[in-house]
Length: 256
Image (cartoon, rainbow, N blue to C red; front, side, top):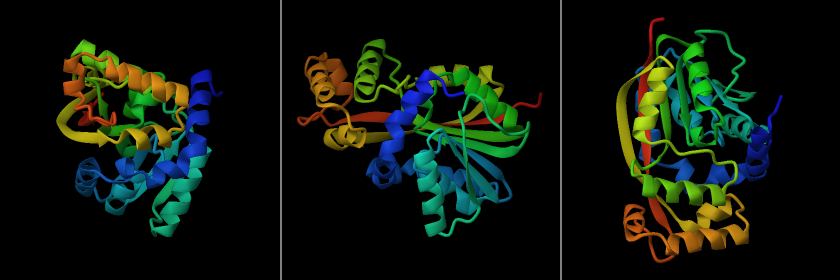
């Protein structure tokens, strides 16, 4: 059954699938190159990409592994992924629809599980991580990539606020310490952590999500009135473009 939050996610992302395929922010990045290198160490792996969106992580990983399932709640995104995979000759990519908190796969079905720019939309991160652990083989690996929340509460509050105003399906960006705690609780033991800066051009950021003008005005007011330490941390520019940190975490499934 699709819950209220899942309906909100569908309402936000189904109509904008093509915008995410062509988005420079999503289509490029050192994080994709790092994911490809990570997957390259497991050429026989069966992989699950959770919350695949427009498929950029799937497209980066698939050439280096045996097979990959691109999994998402949005039919529009999945249709786009299937079409693009076929156009690119990536015949080892299959798509499947569903929520990350309840995966329709057997225990220990995958060697690798990965996700990129999706977890901040998940309504129940602990449940999703437990499901990821369940479908991973013992000793299998997880790679999570997402916007990192600042550890500083003041800066964190401002970032979460503008994220929510821009996109009502936003739940939370998690800090590195929150990620570590959540992974360990799910029997996923951190191996390596990476970080990359990501500049978000304001106009493209709100246009991609079709943010209402009223909300855009509210974001601009919030940024204009933010304390200097917030503006400095976000590297706020004159046109309200700003910078966030992207975190990449690799973890290994315990032996249970």
